[in-house]
Length: 202
Image (tube, rainbow, N blue to C red; front, side, top):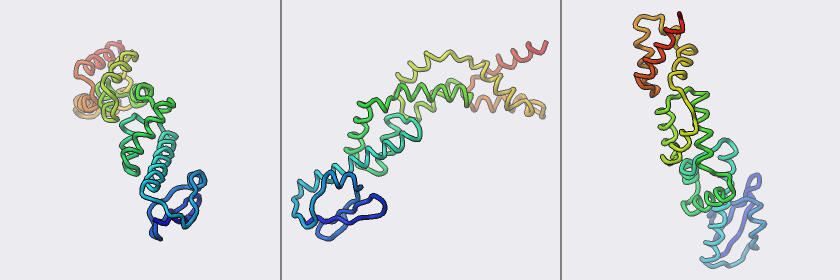
């Protein structure tokens, strides 16, 4: 198989085998693994080159995704598999885990803090969101143990900031209770919140 290369836009380099386009890499990778145009390479050499290209692509994709926000391992892997093969994705994830740039427990801590303090989610809702992002249940439970959250206070805060006007409407209290239950708050916590608010009025 005769290999050739063509410069693409930006830093892209297109590789051809027997004058047919096969794969694209970047100039940095190509300079590190340069093969002169017209070189006859065998299947084994070509596969090593392709594996290297895909691994570099997976590493770059990891860097791009993690620069935007933290990800769980499962979440990151699913996104990588949209553009790279399974072997390259797993190899890149292993590299980022070893380097400490990927950590499900730290990701879970940040997510839980955000969901509690900013989104004002219930504990049940927080758990669901963590599960959805692929965090292991043991990690979720361990992280939640370190958060001293009072769902009743969260409900009061939500009512005062978001639902006060709705309470004044017809059947307002029932509508607010239904909205809070949809957010994952238990009826007993909602009842306690309303009781505490009524007591504070005196």
